[in-house]
Amino acid sequence: MTQPFDRRIKIAPSILAADFASFGAECEAIEAQGADWVHVDVMDGHFVPNITFGPAMCAAIRPHIRGVMDVHLMIAPVDPYIDAFAQAGADVITAHVEAGPHTHRTLQAIRAAGARAGIALNPGTPAAAVEPLLDLADLVCVMTVNPGFGGQKFIDQTAKIRALRAMIGDRPIHIEIDGGVDPATAPLVAQAGADVLVAGSAVFRGGSAAEPQAYGDNIRAIRAAAEGVYA
Ligand code: DX5
Ligand code: ZN
Image (cartoon, helix red, strand yellow):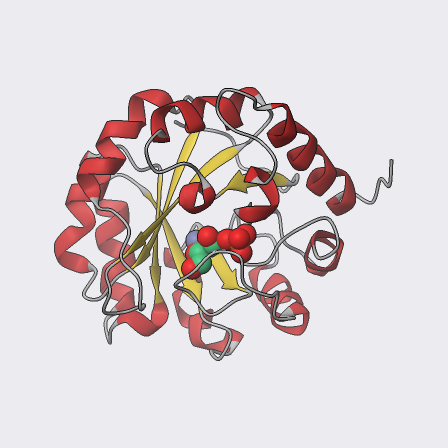
């Protein structure tokens, strides 16, 4: 889905924390409750120590998502799978800079496949690693946990976020934060310059696709905290 670029806060629930037996209904529920993007965590048991799902699952949930399907690839190699995720309907495809030696080529391939290109950095990777790649990127994802699992403790990366925000300047590149985002940590990353906040456990706790009101409360709480409104 094409949306004009903007830096307003966008909440992107990670379906890693959803009911795996009901992904379609879960995607519909979070969008109805105010989610801006739907974040899809793809893990291969090699780049990260966990396995989730692949392009076929993305294609299956695509009709249940009206907005942006944001696919976070925690896989290595990446390049052989880019076309499959693009054909599955991914709007944003994010690859890790640590996933291989040719991230420049990977970002070109993502755009050539018709998706927006994201580049993710693990907590141990400095901002400077992506500086030469920024003109090929539509999004930089700053991991605030070591990737692989939901529900981990937030790792402070605010200095890195500020450095990236300064590096990006006026370029239309989103800064996404992924890991341990909740109403307590959202203001830190928003003030540092982030605009896309991924949240798994902090969105899905307390609700279900059948009883989704808690999802809405959780999304509103994260958004209000990030926007500096303490209701
Ligand atoms: C971690 C994933 C995250 C994770 C976020 O490897 O990329 O998207 O699901 O989950 P929470 O918000 O629970 O830290
Ligand atoms: Zn993710």
